[in-house]
Image (cartoon, rainbow, N blue to C red):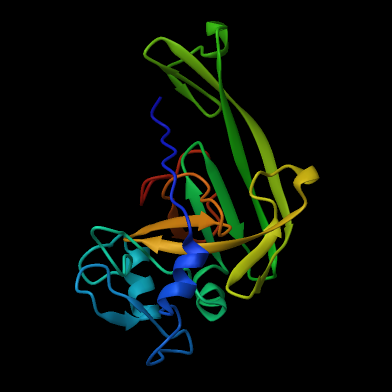
Length: 211
């Protein structure tokens, strides 16, 4: 199946250990962040603009240490307040979370499972199904809606699972080059996601200029 779920751990612990997020010279009040290639720090807003343009690596922000241990700090409360409102964290077929400027969050999370009923995959790829090497996978959609707030370097919101019974969760956000990682300090949820401007809750992100 083309959906990948690599596990990354310890964003929150890394931030505390490195003491990097939000430290140093400021740029609009959000501090600095490690540049992903040079080993230096850059004003956070400048690095964020690079990420929104699809650039990690050169001139962007991301890893603060690499080899033999790769590490990246979580965003500070101030950096979260700059990065998230009015934008969507998303990955095709997997998850989309829009953080409104009004303090409300909305989106969806898909839970995938394998089925032996091939009739549930009428085409190779759809919003909630995928046929991969003759194996059918289907998705259950969990809507995600409610309030969010930034607190102690985390965003607190309805649980990432999208299941009401899971209540409220508080999550660290980190950048790995141009990708967003979400974790709670104990585990990381899924693989890298995109941060995009505006509300983009489609299952598949539309190409720039598409109608």
